[in-house]
Each structure stands twice: as structure tokens, then as C-alpha cells.
Amino acid sequence: MESNGVQGNHWVAYFDILGFENMLCDFKRKFPCCLDLFVKNHYWDVLDAMKKETAYCPDVVSLAWFSDSFLLFSRDDSLKSFACVASAAGGFFREAVGQMMPPRGALGFGDFYADVANTIFVGDALIDAYQYAEQQDWIGLVITPSAYKAHEQFHDSSLVRDRDFVEHEVVLRENASERLYAYRPDTNCDFLDHMLDQIRQMQSSAKRDHPVEYEQKYRYKYERTIRFYEESPRTGIRTTWRKMGTR
Image (tube, rainbow, N blue to C red; front, side):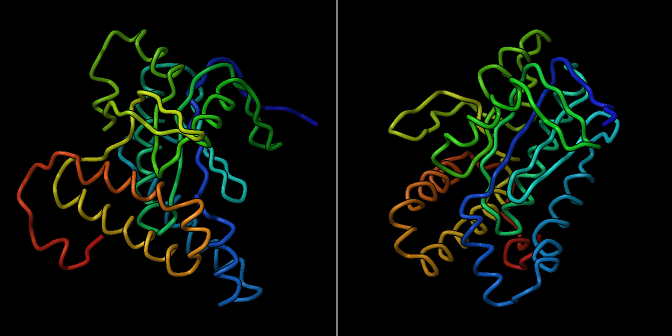
């Protein structure tokens, strides 16, 4: 088996989708034997929108996914690669929320080997991103401590903030918490309110369709996420955009 893989230090963002199994089962009850339609409805719009991000560079960032696991990774450990992966990860988060797919993600850093042709992905950067994505007890995207430390080599303290990340006490599983940089997109009031609308709709659907699981597994995740965006500062002037339902 020939390998055309890349290896070395890389920026890696990993996402999974909260409650994906329920989402898939609900869809199959309505549309049996139509998994292609599920993929078309939920995946392609998200992936296409992310690729159209102005900072997304196909020669810098690669994408792979399996079921509800999505992976973004850079070709190297440069400043440009950090900016592109962070922007693409933010774009994925926004569009996943817009498609009613609640994401949890983390941007990590470290040694990484990727062979897209043979679907082989392994290394410290992937473990770093995977562990922090899975540990978060909300719907969010964070930069791992390893990635933040690596980004400091560029001697620009605004790099993370420029990618729409803010310092926040993120609640993790098993009653733990950690001060991390969490993704909070553009503070324009319309944009944040639209995000909140989408998250509240997902919360209502989870509460209505799976009430027992919602109380046992999801309630506090949604409440923490909503509180984070509710407490975020607003800029700009509210317009009729939100009322029109424009995405």
C-alpha cells in the first residue's frame, strides 16, 4: 500500500456531533433507506460553506470525516496554517449549528501523520484535539493548551482573538473545568442572536423528542452554551435580518 502521507507538527481540529445517534435514528424513521438524503441534507451544506471561508486554503488545510467525526488538519505548523485551520474550524462550527447539528470541537497541536488516500490519521495532535472535544460538557469549540502554547511562538498575542476566540472557564466532564480559549463568533448582535435561535431550536427538539435523555445527558450542555452566548457582549445595531429569517 503506497503512502503519500504528511507528518511532523501540525494543527488539527476534531469535531463530533452531540446526539448524532438520535439524529440519525429520527431521520431514518421518517425516511427509511435514504441515508444518501441524510448526507445531502446535513453534510454537504456544512462542508461546502466551510470550504468557501475566505481564510480557507485548500493547499494548506485538508478535510476528512467518518460518520459524525470530522477532521481538519494543516500541512505544516506555520502561522498561515494556524490561521487557516482556526478559521475553517470556526466556519464548520457556525454552519453545523445552522444545520441543527450541535458540534463539540477542539483545535490541537503536535506530531501528526495523515495519509488521506488510505484514510490513515494518527498522532499526538489528533489525540490532543479528540480528548478536549470529548471532554467539553457543552456545545463549543476550544483551543487546547498545547495548541495555545505552540501559537505563542509567533509572538502575536492577538492571533487567537483575531480568530474569534475568547478566554472562558469551560466546564468539562466529571465536574472539572479549565480556563481555555473558546470560540465566540463575531459579536455583532444579529449574528449572535441568530446563533442563539438555532441553539434554542436544537434544545427544544432534544427536549421534545428525547425527554429522558435530555434531562440525563443534554440539559446542562445546552444551558451552559446558551448562557455563554447570552452573556457575550453585543456590537452594532439590531436590524430586521433576524425577523426575516435570513441565514
